[in-house]
Image 1 (cartoon, rainbow, N blue to C red):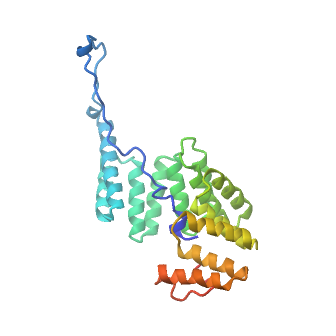
Image 2 (image 1 turned 90 degrees about the vertical axis):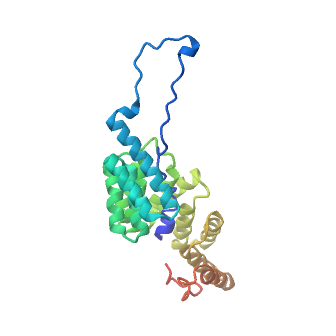
Image 3 (image 1 turned 60 degrees about the vertical axis):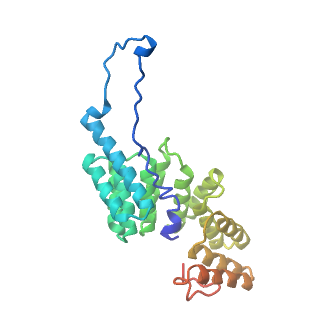
Length: 272
């Protein structure tokens, strides 16, 4: 499974938690006749707290820059965040995404690992690192990261980790685990595109071509197509004897992905 699909949730995967500025509104006690009997504190007066707030601010700016395609600006802001607070894991996530966009997967992986080292029980960081491991030839190793992510009770999107785990288990040749993870993912999120694509592949591998077609069609309805998804759809139709449908999927590859689809043929595996 290609990185683009595996990390469908990675920016949905790597949603940076807690990046908005904290606002403290102090009530006017005198107006209501009350008297303050405890000292008032300004959180920004504490150097550690102010460093964390500055890191949050810079990381929010870095994330916004990355969404706007300003990769250099994103890197600058993420590094400023780490200068303010060297222990702010979300800044390393942004740096990982920056390096991924620049085509530096090894450096991206180092940054994902740094984020996990800082917060080793935080589900979103574990899921991100697991996705990177799987996309970089370490599928079996990635499964422990997804298990750890699912053990985080505060992790808000367990379907994402389950879908990634199932897809990567399939890549690692662990079909039984893949099926269990993918079924759980789809029970939580029936439209999860990673889980649907992996289920289509799993059923195809098992020779269950009608079931594979059903999952493939659901995947194509759930999210924009990719070369991998269209190629599998073509292979499925070829196995079912519908050569016209197989050819139509290949035509879509040529129309939607002209550089990658130039040499595709119905049922061909050259793009997978």
